[in-house]
Amino acid sequence: MSTIFIAEMMGTMFLILLGNGVVANILLKKTGGNGGGIISITAAWGFAVFAGGLVAVNLGSAGELNPATVIAGWINGTYTTNQLLPYIGGELTGAMLGAFLVWLLYKDHFDETSAEPHLQLACFSTSPSIKNTPLNFFSEVLGTFVLLYVAMSFQGSAVNLGSTGRWPITTLIWAIGLSLGGTTGYAINPARDLGPRIMHAILPIKGKSSSNWSYAWIPIIGPVTGALISILIFNLLH
Image (cartoon, rainbow, N blue to C red; front, top):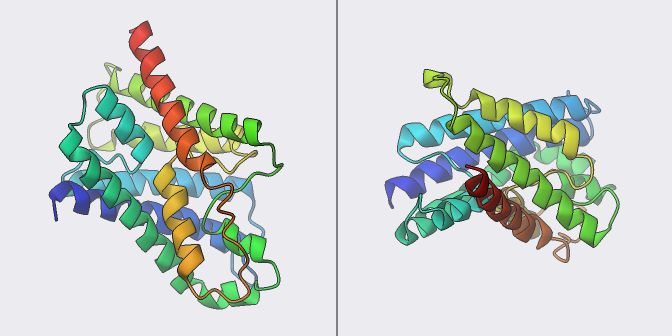
């Protein structure tokens, strides 16, 4: 396996373990964090991105953890065609591993929540609060546009944050979750949604219902579209 594949796999595994882990802690029955709310979820997702990114960077990749930003980087010339598969393959594999660990850790609580399969699914993948396909798609496009455009602005800043250079991304993810995440759960990352959704489909989860594959294209195509629009506008303005 390539260094990039391993780095992105491990980084994304930590991202999903901590990110989907907080969702399980908040939503599943009889957990210590049950009912903790949106502040807990959005904060932990921000910290999860920070942790996963650090792991991946220290193992030798750029710490993208997100196929949408990788594809945008490829379009922009940051990554070569040969790097696409290691990056995206590592991210998808890591997302699946992270989702498996969340299920294993919270298995008893998944069993306790068998009467509410929609809560079980929410611990794996995203879904709309109100089903409206055009607006749901726009939500993922806009969230990813904000993510990448502001992240590129960080990179262009003259401020040198040294080893804490990924901390601004943490605060950005937190802000996106608090401000824009209420409509679709702000996947803003195809691997973050697809990998865990696959695991929901194949794991023996007591009482689980459909994995809602009819919705799954939105958190895949929406983030990629938002990332490409972000690259286009950023380059036009800079």
